[in-house]
Structures are given as structure tokens and as C-alpha cells.
Image (tube, rainbow, N blue to C red):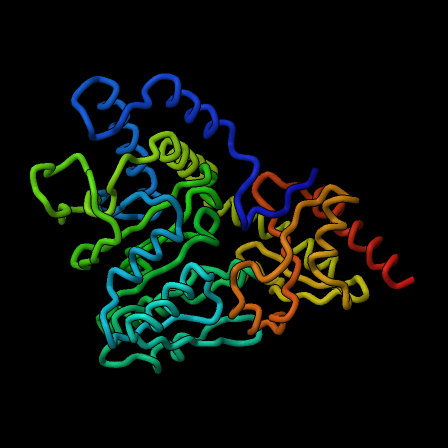
Length: 383
């Protein structure tokens, strides 16, 4: 089996992630922050250690400004809905995942907010000045993906961050695609809120993620409950991260996330990006020579986080992905990838595309086997 669906979730996980999660479950998986006994304290220290590692990876100076969530979607909903009020204005791009688009469209319908969607060029790259031109007096948030989950295009985060900072508008980055293989420094990039999953580039388990909220940004909570702090008060604590971490935390998952973040830092973000980019470039170069193949991703590693989106002639992408899986043991993802607006930009909104997303543990042989499979399928379809 050749796994080329790392944009959906990274696989396999580093051995250290599995081992530390297993140790947690066997040795100290009590409820963190919910007791003063030894095992609860050990669990709490493990969560704190994971928080420290993630903050180090993203250069978050105050670790208490990072709240753990069950995934990036939850983090994005907290950030977007936490700032919304009737008649306010949001700016985003057409390359966003439904985790951004659906909350915005729901607020637009139910709360009468305004949404500006910047389209970008044929690959979805956004001109930062198009963002600037959309700013209004009632703009409360600019939200942008780090890189597209459909075709890997890297967005000009640094430039957008400078513009948002200049106008005093909070800037939210969805780092679901790119965190762990692209450098993310919330200070240098002037990111005010950062949402990320644990199970993709950070190589942790599913069901984990987080949201960084810069000091000075006040969000309304989506959920209230037990936090292990200020239990005598009837209202939710207003301190971070407690205000966004109601209920028992996913201790083994967070331990795995922290271990994955540590692994990424040990291996080096640049090294991981170099490896993924080399494989994506090889795949792009080879696929471009196959008759009938249409590519929707840039072959330039400086513009692509490591994803190759393609179609083969008039073949249904779902059929192509099915054949790759059943006949060749190659895992890809076909369809709209929960990003219909992005596919509209790419011109694939009626059928989607097949997405190849190499990971850190893939090899050049994996890529060449995939290329050979596409060659055979293309030849068979043409004859």
C-alpha cells in the first residue's frame, strides 16, 4: 500500500508518538487539572509539556494563549464566531476550506454579517492588495489559509499580516495545510489567531488541534462548562486557556500532539518541506508528460506546500482514485476536498480533482509507482 493522502491526515505516525500515547494510557492518564493527586498532576504536567512544545514550534511567547481543541475546525469556529456581531464584516479568500466558509456563510444568513471573498489568480494565489481593497470600517477579521488543501498553493501570509496589523484588524490563519512543513512564526508573520490540527503535518493523532489567541483579543465562548478553575463561579472563567477548554481534555491525544510537534522540531521544518517538495516536484514533472493529464498545482516548491492536484482526460476523478486504490494499492483523495470555492477558481467545480499529497515517510519509489500507475490507466483509457 502506498499512502499519498497526507493532506487528509498524515500516515504513518512517528513511532515516538504511538509509544508516548501508549505510555500515557498505561501509566498516568488521569484527569488533568481536576485533582491534586499524583496521577492528575502527572497528566497536567504532560498537557503543559505538550503546550510548551507547540508554542515553541510556532513561536508563541505566552503558552497560556494556546487552547487545545478537538481539531482545526473547532478552532476556526471559535475564532470566527467569537468575533461576530450583527452587521460586521469579514474578509477571506476563495481557497478556504469549508471549516472557514460554512461558519461565515451561516453567520451571513443568521446574523446578517457581510463577507468579502477575494478570488485570486488561476491557481488561487491571492494578491495582498486585493485584501487591502476590501477593508471597511466594520471589518472585524481577515482569515486566510496558510496553503490550499486542494492544490497546495502557498498564500502570502506575511504580506496579509502586515496589512491587517497596519489597519488594526485581527488576522486569523488556518494552518491546517502547511503547519509542520512550512515555517509559522506568529510574531514575524503578525498572526493574531492561529488554528491548526494535530493529525496532519504535526504528525499527532486525530481528534486534536489548537487555537492561539493573541492577548487583547476577546472572544465570546461557544461552549461553557467545567475547567478545573474558579469552580465556585456561575460564569465561564475569562482567563486563557481555561475559557476555551471546557470539559475533560483529550490527554493521550494532546500528549501525542506534543510528541509529534517535538518530532517535527527535531527533524526540522525546512528538512520536512524539502523532502515533501522534492517528491511533489518529481510527481508534477512526470505527470505533466503523460497525455491527457491536467495539473492544477504549481511545480515551484516556493509556491506549493506539497500537494499535486490533477485530472485525467474526461475520466471521473472518483473513478481514477478508485482504480488507483483497488488495482495499484495507491491511496489518494478525489472530489471537492471540502473546498468547493477553491475548485471554482481552478475550474474543477463540477467534478473535482484527484489529489496526491506525499508525506515525510514517502519515497521516490512511491512517486514513480504512482506515475507508472497513471501511465497505465491513461493508456488503457485511450485505447
